[in-house]
Length: 194
Image: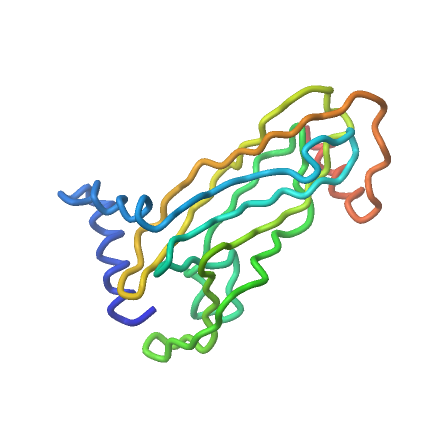
């Protein structure tokens, strides 16, 4: 992201906040840049207590890039996507989000960034979740509390867009299975807070 790109990003964000004319058209970048945003659980059917993997996939058209949820360079801390998980319910999100493994690293010396990670094409974020041992059997949809997607092209960075994301999960009938040891404390704490 060049200094010009940073300036364009700041200007676009200010225009959106001010509700200035043209602010509505600022969101049209999403239709041009994004092929697909999809959430899913693997496996799609699980017993109470079982660990599943939530996958958030972002597919971009050529010429656009997005970001991980965390940057190694503090100067690039604002160039991230934000994923907010829901409070414990049918599933309890545990551990940390794993950012896409396929990224490109570049330097942006004009704005003091030595290592900026960007994702082109397909970006896949994963996060472990445990089906609540207290979950009742049946189909359910789990909706992210928020997904704020940041996208840039070669010249511009666009204002982040909040994209709704949900994933279907079928809770199987039967007694709960033991929660994996690695996540037992997090699950116990989440259930105690309900």
